[in-house]
Structure formats: C-alpha cells, structure tokens
Image 1 (cartoon, rainbow, N blue to C red):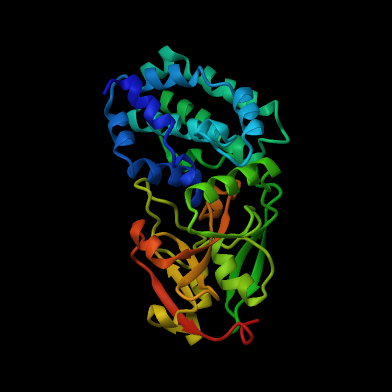
Image 2 (cartoon, rainbow, N blue to C red; image 1 turned 180 degrees about the vertical axis):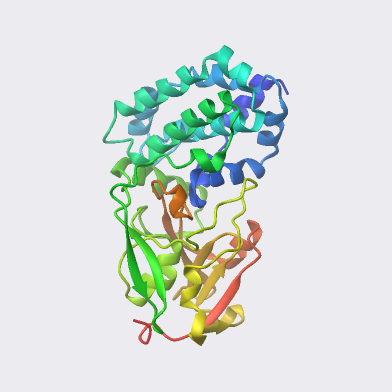
Length: 341
C-alpha cells in the first residue's frame, strides 16, 4: 500500500476517538496506535511525515465545524466530528515523536502546520475549549522538542494552565486521607456533545448514564461519589507517570487508602461491589443491572501532567474490558453504600 493511501486510512480510522477513554492524551493516542497495524506500519515509513503533513494541510477546521453542524449526532465520517482535529494533531505528534526526524520537520515547516490548526481552532472559542487546545499545544511542543532532539512525551504533556485547579482532602471511613482535585477546566457543550455522540455510535452496547464532564473521574465515582462524597477528580497515585508504552505504573498510593484497614476485602466477581484495574489505572462499581458494572472513562492520572479531563460515565460488561486487554484487576467486597459515608 502506498504511503498516501496508508495515511488516509489512518486519518479516517473509525475508532479515532477511543484515545479519549485513556488516562491522558499522550497515553491514549499511544494505546490507540498500538491496536491497529496501520499505525504501526505508518511509523516505519520514511515518507510518513511528508505525506501526513501534506494531507493535514488540506484539512480545514471551518469545514469540519460546518460538517459537524449539518450532521449533528450522525457522525457520518470521522471528519463530521469537531474532535477529529484533536485526533489529527495527536496522530501527527506521535509520528513526530516516534520518528524523531528533525531534518524532515524543518524542511516541511511543520510548526506552521501545527500553528495553523491552533489558530483556526481559536476562531471558535465556544466550540474548542481547553481540552481541544491541549491537543494543539501537545502537537506544537512535540515538534519543537524533536527539533531540539529532546523528545519526551511526559515533559510535553503538561500544556494546560493549572492556576484554577486546587486540591482538597477527603477522609475515608477509618480516617485515612485521599487527595482530590477541583476546578478542572470544563468541556464546551460542543465537545461534550461530540464525545457523547461518538461513544453512542461506536459502543451501542454500553449504556450512557451521564454526559461527558471534567469534574470527576472513575476513581472518584467508584470510591468517593458513589458513597455520597463530594464531586472531584481523584488520581490513583500522586506520583506515578504513564510509561511510554502506554501502561501505567502500579502505584496506587492515593486511591488505595480506600481499601486499607479491612474496609474492603478481595472477593470473586459475583460478590464484587468495586473493582480496581491496577494495570489500567481504572475503577468501577457494581451496577444495579446484573452482570454489569458502572464506570467513568477518562484521561489523566497524575497531577504533574494535569490538563483537561475528558470522561464518559458508562455501564459496561466486565467481559468487554477483559477483551480490551485489561485483565489485571482486583475485586472488592465490603460495606454497603448506607454505611460508607
């Protein structure tokens, strides 16, 4: 397959927004690209950056916005979703980081490509909020760091101002403390609608319980808010960083305070009230529907790389998670919701 056709195949990948269910943008796009051979092959192509930049330069943000308005909730193609622009930027960022070809970047003037997309997004502030601007900044930073031959996903992912974000201290039943985050930049209505529509279309077997929001994540929903706690974001760890291969270190120094002291104990799935996926840095709770679990799918696992959190709160089959490569988990039984306050 010629590189031009391969680039088009990757740009039009139907599950392009699955990266939004990961812990952060870099982690999410890395995981997404590891699931499809087309991405793996594209990274190997010497002319990948040249062809990708050429095709990206034909993409118009204004056209995508207009297409999204005409085909609202239909998503006839990836380019009918406003968040397609974010995906394109993150895909470019990953190819840049993977190939680390500073000469090609200079010859193609890829910074101009990145800056154009950011500028066009800025023309629609009611549509593209902090979350979307993050993708632009991440793409721009990957190009700059590659030109300086200092490629680092972890270093470049902290792109959103944290001035509005503050920490709060939560207390477990037995007095242990857990750190929560409040004041995260919220998604725009257009971003929420685009994500809700995407997941409804691509995962019809999952029941949407609440719309996308940055105010809380899976850990907070499962261990805190389901027990009548305040609305906030809770990181699994206060110190761990996503690894470059897309995995997250099994460091649960923050979230594990909930299951210390014997409040919860290991159990089998039929008796599980809560589940912690320690390889995926993810938590879920038992649903009132037999055989299903409730969870919030979101990004960002550490305060050091904080940026906009995008999440969808879904009820899903446990088997589906196992099929998606998240077999390492702990199941807990324990107190009822009336006892845990």
